Length: 301
Ligand SMILES: [Zn+2]
Image (cartoon, rainbow, N blue to C red; front, side, top):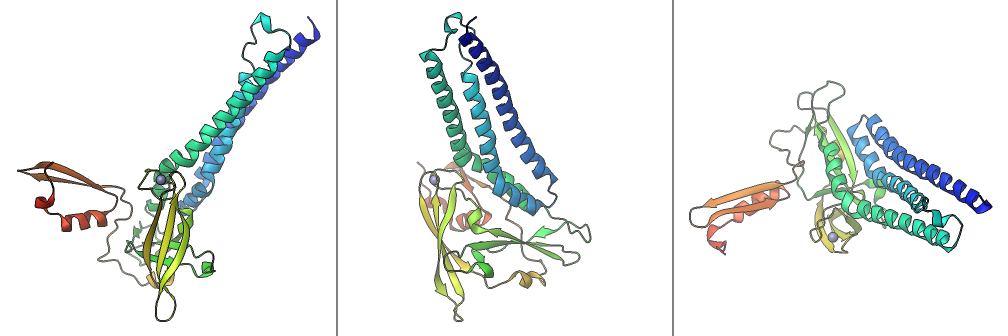
């Protein structure tokens, strides 16, 4: 047995060891992240933690797995007796190992960047709309529904370059009148892109387009851009002058909770034209559709 055989033996052993370590590191990163999520008791804190960390840590986990695959590729042909001396093949195989690892990491990145946010979005929604419990009384709280177009500007963030709007979720304990107000940063939330369907639409710019008489902002236009298909969209919002404190005296009687609804399906049966199905992302849109619906204007094609 020559020197090179000994070298190859050490090489193969270390590839196996490094490969196993890499896979273990990937698995540990995944488990540690999910363990940290499970330790957070407050739903809003859980939401923020997942929103800020999950994609990043899953990327690290997949990177470790990719490196592990790179090591394993360097085991290819280790049983073939013809390859017992280091030659050009050895470096070609190293190159393939490196390329394989890069490819796996690249694909994992694409999946986490574009496909995964759809799954992440429903996960985040679950925590955002999970009924809160009043810590003082133990009563279940109810989420108030705000008019969709009501947005708020956070006082601290009104600096010219970053006027990102804030969503307020107001939870009320109807028995005691206690409220819990949770703030959601507009620019941290990814929306569904109407063009490609991924949850990759984010605010890139906001501008105040109308003022109240006292010169406080009245209308805000948000410009969104999809990170996947580059589709852009702009939506105007009326800025509410309500502050979190204004909800304190609120007694919910007429307000309904329609926030945690993902899909409204309407099925219209007609004797002449048969069944029709319509889907809407919000109750408001479905309502608007029903108000304007005219069976004569629906083509029978
Ligand atoms: Zn898109």
